[in-house]
Image (cartoon, rainbow, N blue to C red):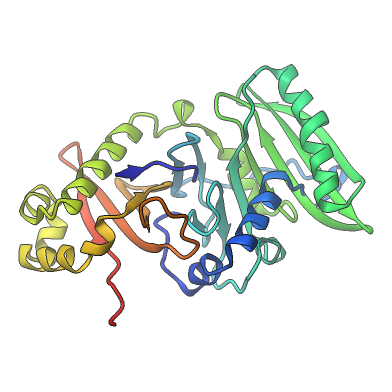
Length: 318
């Protein structure tokens, strides 16, 4: 079964991801709670209205919360370390907690659970739910909120200081798919996301998402069924040029223990007709704090999304 769950560009299987995903389940839950209810980091009177250049930046699609945002230059999106959110950071990054990510100019993005998308309901949520939770979780009372509107959607900029120091800067966007962007301070990289985060239906990728998801679904199911010939024959020319069907058959066979597991795809990155996503493998009916990771890359060829590359985990030698 392929799961489309809440929650980089194609996530690099780096030491950073291993460090975060190796945290204990208790720690991971704490990080998730922090991300759900945290705040931001500069006084609003310091907030600069200038925009940054986002032309040509790759874009990230979140499949379940259905929002899109530009990936800042030289930044990586990790959608696997903390389920329910994307962590966006500039490598190299040395971090063990989400607070470490924020301290090193990292950014978190996640959907908001707001059923009523009216402007009034959004303001009520920010003032009466989000800000009180923020104060409680950060033990900070110095919280300022400024409401605005952009692209037809209501938004709010929330800043938090504690003991006179910046703690969080948060951009909350209302709309069909409300979302939050969280960091310690508003940098140009933050602005790139702030300026571009949008409902999928209103983005330039609205006509690509269904085709991408269907192609991923089809290719993953073929891999799970060990149908190497069908995978190979339907793949993009680049895959067939760089590998053989025999090599693909061997790779699928080696990954058999993982291909029988749940495979979750949170979303992925799009750039110039290419799409890459991380694959998260977890045993059936288990919440594994240390999942195996893989990746899939698609290429749009002759109007269709085809398999360009597939990376699968290999069991460790006994």
